Amino acid sequence: MLRLTPTSHWPVFDSAGIRTLEHALQQRSQTPLMETAGLAAAHLALSIAPHAQRIWIAAGPGNNGGDGLEAALHLHQWGKTVIVSLIGDAKSRPADAQLAWQRATQAGVTITTHLPWNGLKDMTAQDLCIDALLGLGANRPLAAPMQTWIHAINNAKAHILALDVPTGLNTETGQLLGCLDAEPEAIRAEHTLTFIAAKPGLFMGHGRDVCGHIWLASLEPPGSSPEWLSAATPQAWLNPAPKVVSKTHASHKGSHGDIVVIGGESLSLRGMGMTGAAVLAATAALHAGAGRVMLNLLGSTPCPQVPNDVMQREWSVLNLEHQVVVCGCGGGEAVVPVLAQVIQRSALLVLDADGLNAVAKVPQLQILLQSRPPHQGTVITPHPLEAARLLNVSTREIQGHRLQAAQDLAHRFNCTVVLKGSGTVIASPGQTSRINTSGNGLLAIGGTGDVLAGLLGARIAQGQSAFMAACSAVHQHGALADEWPEHEALTASRLAQRLC
Image 1 (cartoon, rainbow, N blue to C red):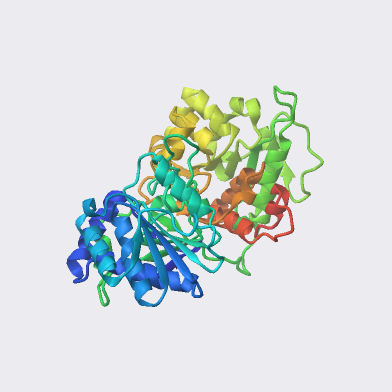
Image 2 (image 1 turned 30 degrees about the horizontal axis):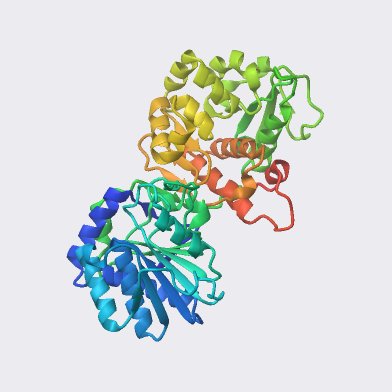
């Protein structure tokens, strides 16, 4: 059993891939996979709640419920007080789940069809609830009885362990399944034990909030070769922690690249200046180790708040053909007149914020972006609304298909894409996409995206490919938030200054 952490490099499979792997595994194993899954769940349950006096298992009508019944069998045999509550007719379950019900019944496990223990209110913090209601195949809105059970589990005082996926979460997208007559709610698990392989929805969207600690039980038989994992093609990989690269003694400022940040409109149509966004990006590039950082504030006189180490430059003296360009941070409408030249001339380009909004509005800019040759590395960093504008779809569609949306953008504009959000996706033509698992809600404030753009520019300037620079920068950006001191407010300026 393996715990998947923000440093893990692990393949992620969609539902079709999981089914293929399941078939490959079952051919190699003499034990039904449901029995193996139930035993793994029972072992993890004892690790989570070794002093539990009562364990309640909510079992659904499918194979996920069968996994719960198998876990109940072992926990009962190990001396725990176990009650299983079934939703649905036990005799109409799939064959393996029906066999699990028979095994649990014959072993003397208490099985009911209702909520036990006064609606779980009598459980203590040492006790355990196991969610085995719905698994991999759940994709429809939840009926009222299922929602009632979810609510009861979430309000119990006990530890909560979800099997395969917290009920109410879509394993493909990380979005909530919804319900028929109320606000959607999913099991808020303390631990999730997923089977066979990692699923994308556990690491994106609401999955980051409801899964808790994620564990993987591959269910492979002892001594099995890893070839079974190649039976299906991963949909993505989890984005691992990057290797730390130190500056060599013999290097100089030219060894670590020149960055120019273009943005920071001095006065927008709303009467508000946006120079701070560009200053944040430049500050981030500086602290991330770029050799030289230049700043071009659109329509602005030199800004006194710019760090002394950042050189302010007029548009006319910029040598874009030999620089890494970060464009769009706080650019407002002022970025539009210069963007065509930026796209055509920049040796390497990170396009963010208002630069992306301008591309979405102007078809000619889209053509120019699509026409950049491969050796001119390009990264775009949209949040979901900006991605929706670029693809001319709704934000809901982006969030419901984050992996596909990032891949569509990468192919449309022939570039690396950083689709920001819960479970940031990094996609590029010819590469298997990455899902980033570092970071948390502390980053949900203004300016942190500008910091990421500057950090990304620095990594490209230091010689990384566009795709690897994006993977490295996104992970580091999130890891800083994960390590942030508990009693210190995270602000974008502080975040930029902590980079290295």
